[in-house]
Amino acid sequence: MRWINANQLQTWAGEQIAARTVLSRLIGQLIRGSAAEISAFRFPAGDSAQLQGWDGRLIASPRDQFKTYVPDGSSVWEWGVEKSPASKANKDYAKRTTTPGEDIVPSETTFVFVTPRTWKGAGTWATKNKKDGPWKDVRAIDAVDLEEWLRLCPAVAASFARENGFVPSDHAQSIDEFWDIYSGRFSPRLNEKVLLAGRSQQKQELEQALVSGSGIQRCKGDSLDEVLAFLCAVVRKYASGQRHG
Image 1 (cartoon, rainbow, N blue to C red):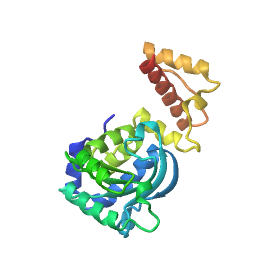
Image 2 (image 1 turned 120 degrees about the horizontal axis):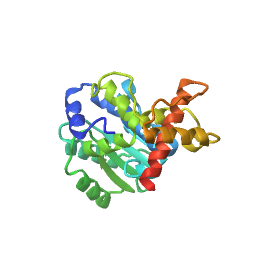
Image 3 (image 1 turned 45 degrees about the horizontal axis):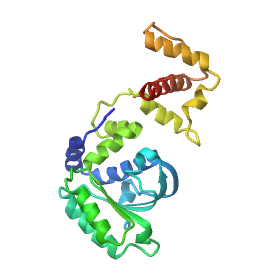
Image 4 (image 1 turned 90 degrees about the vertical axis):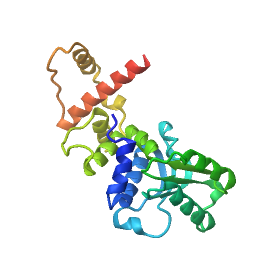
């Protein structure tokens, strides 16, 4: 499900006074939803987003589907909402490359610039600066990239969309969104197999009911959230089997 597209992000960046501080929180949430492991995380948001220093610093290992967005290992982040992302990126890159900080080793660190604007030259900019500069890698994430990243993190996307007026402020959630929020309550993150363990009969009955459209299927659990989580797990596992079968 796509809650937000690139055009909406670009419009939002131009209309919202607090877009930069909100963007800081959004990037932090996306990273937390994308990393398999985080060793160091500093992404000031709200009033703290105006503090001097890097906009974000991270040491993490991304999950496979998020390697395009979250670098493996150490990374430093800058972002801006200006109309000309290239100008802001060049300014930040020049400043940070000259004075990265005593505890940052550029050859071991990835430089990431993020903009909610559509930037056609983002890839070229990143490739050139990686080739000519001292950084381990250089990446640029624009509105088109953010649209896809948000699609892969539905819980983050839904929350951001509601808070910023992209969708009606109701309580509807997609299956993936509910599961992402529910499974995130556990450490390590809950896997569908764990929730479905010992419930093979109930799982089979629900699958048959969903396929046949036979009507109401009753499920029982210790709480409403547990029942909803069971339903989501069954649907997600079934859909995954259909895709890979």
